Image 1 (spheres, rainbow, N blue to C red):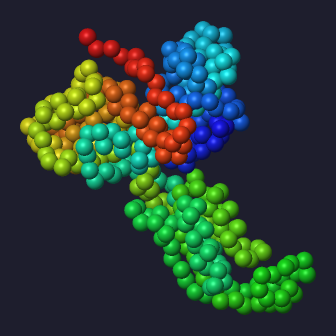
Image 2: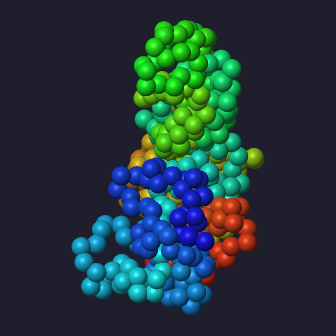
Image 3: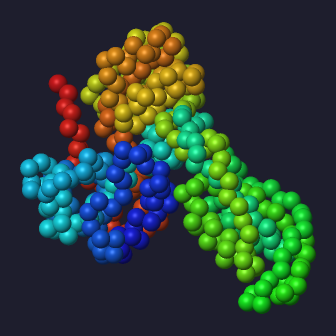
Length: 364
């Protein structure tokens, strides 16, 4: 199986388009047409992980964090990133990273962290804007169903937990084809009026090419009329962080001990405990200090993330408990998430999760 075939379900689950502007997700080392024997999944690509891949004869590494992040201006071996890239190329090992795009999807890194913590009623904490478009097309009444279904199958028509969403308006279309046309209905050179359906549906911009191709293929007209509108709506299936609720409320210290046990973190740094019960929980895998005020606005009782700086803890202002469980600890389940995506699509393919703990932080 080729790399491009293996990464396809990953990019359908978490399109590269959804990565943050500073990120570097995607295929970083290797050729997409390279044949893959085994896959090794890791949170970070370290020199030890690369050696593990060589030992286990895995010629594709899939990581959460990109090994090439700030960019390489040379490959001379002066740092670990350069050594890893050089050694991967020498050993014909591909490296693919799925980072903030996996953070930003509603079933991604934050979702699996919520699941591990036993949270229900999950919602994106800070939804993305400017990701939605509206597609409008016009077709004969008898062909409207097949055109709608083609667009829905390609990824259009999702609205929250609803799918196949569209608005349909009857009307009359007119057209006159030149002598070079081959009209589906009517005669070339003659003005024709046809009872049509105006179909409106929304879609995420990263599905646009697939949806347009599906619509054009299903549409009977030789020349298809359609409009695309930019929308300002928030897209509640994509964004940063997530909130969820415990089935039964817990006191603060009891919940923190539960989090420590589940994540196996060596230390939880937290703001002042407020003596409240914990019911609604906000999380953000990785570095989530930018979401503190957003978590407060949701009414969350506690915000769990990593990489909280000293001054960030003051922003709790007795409104929420901020708990820093560590960057690695808050994202460690990404490996399991990636593995599950693979097993669902390729149940018989050799996919391994790295045995190595790549957390660079140790606790005394």
